[in-house]
Image (cartoon, rainbow, N blue to C red):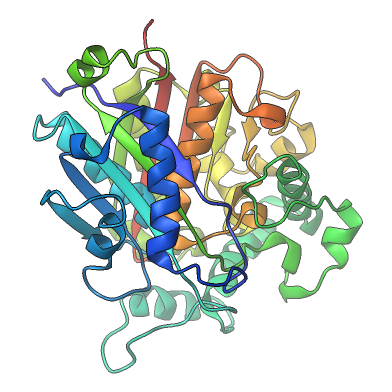
Length: 396
């Protein structure tokens, strides 16, 4: 039987526009988030037995260089790269170490130091890992570069054509997430916009305007995970949050079934969510707060259906209902999401973990959702990996 896994400490930096903070390289980012997580857990680095460190853009063993800012104790340090789901992949691996009894305390750390502008490839002398995905989409959609807004925008257009979703539905998601970010001191952007502002901002790939797209960002996040015996021996039950379900899926054959939504991971998301719901004994209706991967507003809309918040084709109605913000059935992306909080690839999943941990503890300040008993996290990287995690407060 697998061991229980608890989040006992979290920390993150403010997410920033790339290069905005002088003398702020990835070791300094990692030191800031990691030190906060250790302090939150009330432990020293000497008590950490394994570390999993995620980043997408960086040299080999940057994970070790980052962790050495916290201490040099000879523990295993594993470098993790899984595109935009890198941070949650590090979280998944650290949880697996606890689950399997290989460690009683593990660190999941993620960071990114990014270049301004759209994402691009680093190595152009070899096969691109998403080459097949891009070729498949090019067969059913006009091609636009950079690829990311094209890929998610094409899936949004497909939903519009199939179900009658409108550009306003996507814009409403952008409006919601920017509004939520006003109360998040860690967010890269903390400004609200009217729906018309969202619609009138620069078009990136119709229907996606600039204010519906996540920016490149610098930043870091960290989480300390522990076993039940570790929690008990150190009296951490009062702040511990249990991971009650967790799954990672990669591409299925259906990714290349000729639909844009599956090229951007819809089936990966569906299967990961189902596995987590089965593990946790919970359904979508049992969560009060959700942090999900809104790299573009189109992806958030599709995730409403993939995660089971509504039936397939009903996401537009869900947006109109107001059930994904304060006062509704769920509060989705109270942090502001990737659109407003920012998206330093290696840190995103751990920032989601931090937000949900604070929500379950009741310490999210002005962002606090009422009556949080269970929280859901979703993070995806194309090429591809989807990670879904369910959390509940530890039994007191």
